[in-house]
Amino acid sequence: MIIPDYQAGQYVRMELPYYNANITSCACAPESRGCWHSIGTTVLRVFEDGGLLLENRHGFVRVAQPDEVYH
Image (cartoon, rainbow, N blue to C red):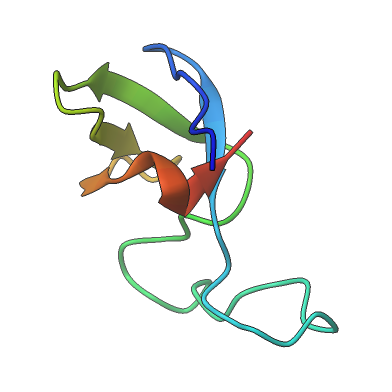
């Protein structure tokens, strides 16, 4: 598997946590930290080990691995 290179400032989406191909949206909307699976998630930093610091459109941050996101 080839993991693409990500850059700070790039918009990404986290993979949906579902394995059912018919589900195209997530259940994050009611959560207080917003959604990580929709547009508006930005790479803030790319760590030396390839990990990513992400910020969603609600201003919350989290760490993710490159294989958890796509652009």
